[in-house]
Length: 164
View 1 (cartoon, rainbow, N blue to C red):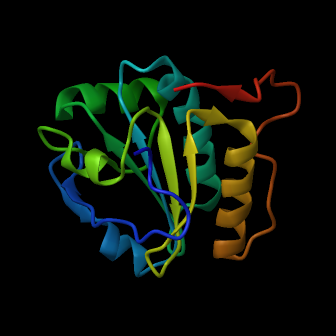
View 2 (cartoon, rainbow, N blue to C red):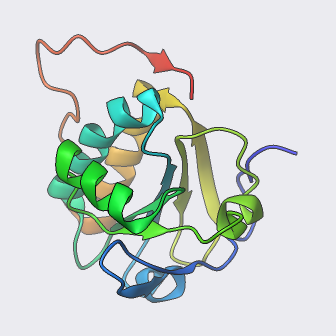
View 3 (spheres, rainbow, N blue to C red):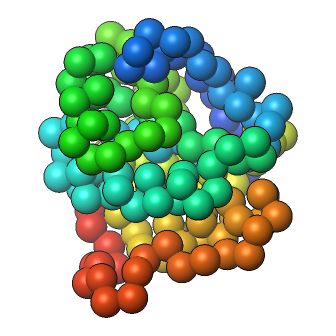
C-alpha cells in the first residue's frame, strides 16, 4: 500500500503528547498547515532527521504553521528522545498497535506529511531527503509570511538522502 500520497484527505489525529496533553490535527489545521512527522526513537534516520525538523520548527512554527511529531514509542522513551535530540515541537504518542501510523499507510520511518489547512495531503516524504526538507521549509515560510531561509547551514556535510 505505502504511505498516503498527495491529494488524499489526511486521516484524523487525536493523541496525547509525551506529557499526557491531548492534541489533534483538526485543531492545528485551524491555525494553518501542519507537517506531521512520524518517527521511532530507535531509528537512526529519525535520529539524524529530528534536529533538522526542530530547526524548521524554530524558524517557522507558531500561530500559522504547526509541526507535530508522532512517535511509535511510549511516553518515557519519547520524552528522553526529544530531550536528547533537542525536539521542542509536540511529540504525540501513537497508541498500541499504531492505529494512526496504519491509517497513514506507514511502512518506514521517518515519514512526513505536509497537510494543507483544508486537510489535504500536499506532499509525502519517506526517509531523509534534503530536497524534501528544503521544500517543506519553503512552504512553512510562505504559510507564515516570512522569507525562506536555508534550512541547512553553510559548511554542514549533509547527504542528499538517507533511507528510513
